[in-house]
Structure formats: structure tokens, C-alpha cells
Image (cartoon, rainbow, N blue to C red; front, side):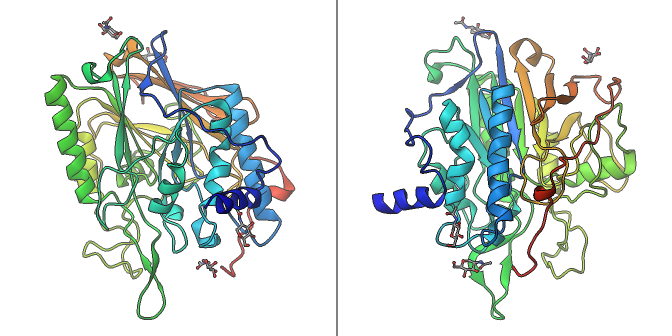
Length: 414
Ligand SMILES: *[C@@H]1O[C@H](CO)[C@@H](O)[C@H](O)[C@H]1NC(C)=O
Ligand SMILES: *[C@@H]1O[C@H](CO)[C@@H](O)[C@H](O)[C@H]1NC(C)=O
Ligand SMILES: *[C@@H]1O[C@H](CO)[C@@H](O)[C@H](O)[C@H]1NC(C)=O
Ligand SMILES: *[C@@H]1O[C@H](CO)[C@@H](O)[C@H](O)[C@H]1NC(C)=O
């Protein structure tokens, strides 16, 4: 076993670096003494592309650099990996989770902890949420877990409480903030083929068993603490509401600053029929309605952060009943992050969304957020407060990473 681990690290190209140190078991998340708590959200890192040529491994090196640079420019209290950590359709069964060690090394080096959601590319024939989670849990800095079980639940469904800095016994404290993580699944079932030898597609929405767990767990927490606890949520694939905001209301560069190149964007339940078929005959099956109802009925839930659509980086306050929808927005902010990886499609400049939560603003359910780019620049700084959508901000420049060897090339042979 030990030999296997060592060999894996050698293959992962980590042998030239300092020995991997094991940090002490993660302690509870807490606000800093100044009353703030900051997140860095990396999304769509897409490690492990084209392992068989030189381009793929070079993109992994570039993506590690993005993480290192962002963490040095603006060190957070928690890193969120918001799905598509690994391009699973390109990786080999034997070593597909080795890439996880490369991804988390920058956090290990800095003594930071992280929490993941899994994306459609993390659920493939040769890798899946369960195997990535096992690999993550080798590291005490991993806060990713699984609180809902069953074939249809996905894996990365859990929550993390964040306590005030003055809390000494967490069992006796009321969390100041809750972080909810959801698995929007998609991709394919692990090591499954149908009678024709084809991969078996996995539904691409948050399952109703997870929605039930979310509602019940939140109700219990409210009852236990006699308080609505402010919260944030993370899911890889955005909901249909993001698509309707984009196409019916329209993203305004000064009101919802950010890149809006993935138009129309790809939401949950895309490509599925209401009756559960995914044979290409339907564009949208409405299976994310239960999840949208739950998030709009959860008091204190300030924002839902997604990735998946690499070319979209805006936040939109969803506060209306949009044409063609049955669920009405309650003012929750639906945000994309910034494309972080050199694998995966697109050349939009790489970076990470930063989220600053201040205890003093939680009474108004307001948070601040901006994008830290690997260039060192920050863009798209906004306050997600009660007047977001009306406040005027500078437009976000639509910059690309100029790097001839980085251009996306995906070998259709796989
Ligand atoms: C996984 O194995 C393949 C095939 O041997 C190899 O090309 C690739 O570099 C390996 N990846 C890692 C992360 O070790
Ligand atoms: C999965 O891993 C196996 C074993 O290494 C490999 O033969 C296959 O090409 C990989 N990819 C897919 C999509 O099955
Ligand atoms: C700890 O800080 C929180 C938030 O600032 C405050 O509400 C609470 O009263 C403080 N508790 C103690 C014991 O000081
Ligand atoms: C929301 O934040 C913006 C930008 O900081 C500010 O101009 C606006 O006044 C704030 N709105 C409220 C209600 O505080």
C-alpha cells in the first residue's frame, strides 16, 4: 500500500517537491477575530486532460500555477473546488484520482483546507465522486464529505458550519454561517455499460432525495438554534433560473458585471426529458424545479455559486417570476465564478471568485465578492446587498489568456 502511494506520487510528478506533510485534523471553521471569513472558489480545473500527449500534462502545471498565484495574491480562510476537478473521460482507471493530489498541493503547502462539489466531468466511467472523495479524505485538510447516500443522490452533498472567532466549544455555539454543498451529478455512472457497451448517463440535476435532506436538515438547525442562520450554497451546474435570467431578463454589464459569453448557458436537467429519457429528444426536463423551490424557500440563503459554463462570470439577483417558470425568485443571488483551469474549453483569463463574508453585514444578508485573476488584477467587485441589480458597477473586461501552447485541444479519439 505504502509503495503504491509512493509510486503514485512519483507518477504525479511531485517527487521533486518537499515531502508531503500531514497536517493536523481540520478544526472547525471560524471567522477571524476581525469578524470576516473569506472564500476562494476555483471551478472547472479540468486536471488530467490528454494524459497521452504533452499538451495535457502541461495544462495541469499551468492550473497548479493559477491556484498558487491566486492563493498568494489573496489568501482565503477556505478554498472551494466547485466541480470538474478532473476531466474523467480522459483518465485511466488505475490512476485517475492521482490528479487530486496535484490539485490540493497548493492548499497543503499553505495549511489551508478545502471543500469540493463534483461536476459532470468528475463522474465518468474511470473516476467518480466516491473515488475522488476517498482520495481527498487522505488529507486532513479536506472538508468534503457525503451526508446523503444512494445511487441517485450523488456524493458531494453536505454542509459546513462556520463559527464566530470567540466560540470555544462549537457544540455550545450557534454557527454564524452555513455553507451548503450540492452534487449536480451528470456525466456517466462509474464502470457501467449497457447491453450495447455504451456508457450509462447519469442525471444532471440535484436529486430529490438531496432536496429533502436539505430542507429537513435546515429545519432542524433552525429549530435547534432558534434562529435563521445566514448561508451560502455551491453546486457545479447552475439551475434553469440562471438561463432564464440570462435569456429573458438579460445580463447588463454594469448591473451584473462579468463575462457573458456562454449564451445560452447550459443548466441542470439539460438534455433530459420530463419522463427521464436522455436520448437527445428533449432540451430540458424540469427536474431541477424541486431544488429551485427549496433554495428560494430557505430563509437566509444569500447566494448559490456555480461553474460549468466557463464563459459566464456574473452574479444575478433572482427576485422575479420569469416567463416560462413556475418558481419565483426570492432575491437569492445566482453567481458564476471564474474559469480556473487550463484544461477544459475556452481561453477566458483564469482566476477565482473571492467571497468576503463580514459578520457585521450578515444582519442585512449582504456579502462582498470579486474575481482575483492570475494576472494579479481583480475585476467584477460587487456587493451582493439588497440593491444589487440596481447598483451601477464598471464593466468587467473580457480578457483571454494569450498563450499559444495553452489553446484547448481535445483529442476526439477519446
Ligand atoms: C496515469 O497513467 C497514464 C498511463 O500510464 C500516464 O500517462 C499518466 O501520466 C498517469 N497520470 C498520473 C497523474 O500519474
Ligand atoms: C479507462 O481506463 C481504462 C484502463 O486504463 C482504459 O483502457 C480506458 O481507455 C480509459 N478510458 C475510458 C473512457 O474508459
Ligand atoms: C461572540 O461573537 C458573536 C458575534 O460577534 C456575538 O454575537 C456573541 O455574543 C459573542 N459571544 C461571546 C461569548 O462573546
Ligand atoms: C450596496 O452596495 C453598493 C456598492 O457598495 C452601494 O453603493 C449601495 O448603496 C449598497 N446598498 C445598500 C442598501 O446598502
